[in-house]
Length: 135
Image (tube, rainbow, N blue to C red):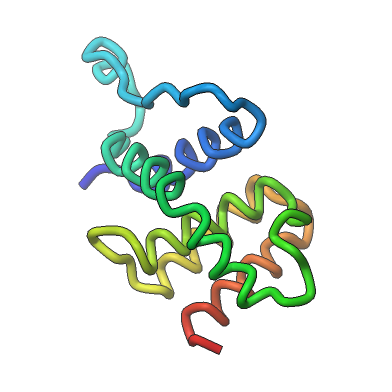
C-alpha cells in the first residue's frame, strides 16, 4: 500500500501554497526517474485527489467548519490549521472513499502537531470531533 500519510502532507503543502498564490497549482506527479529514487512509496494520486477535492468543495467544507466553530470565523483561522481541517473534512464527508472519522481525526491531529501552532492540534481535534459526532 502506498503511503497516504506523506500524501496528506503534500496535499497540505500544496493547499497552503494555493492560499498565497492565485495561479494554477501544478500537480504533484513525479517523473519515473524521481519515483525510482524515492524513499517512500507515496500515493501521489491520492494527494492530487485531496487537493482537487478540497478546492472543488472549499465553500461547502468551510461552511461545515464554520458551523462547528461558531466563536471563530473561518477567515480568522491559522492557514495551516484551516487547511488541515479542510483535508480531514473532505476525507470524512466528500471523498469517493470516505475515511473513518477516527482515522481522519488522528491523521489531522498529527499533521497539526507537526505543522501547526503549539496548541493548534487541540482546535483541530475539537472541531473534527464535533463534525464527526454531528454536534
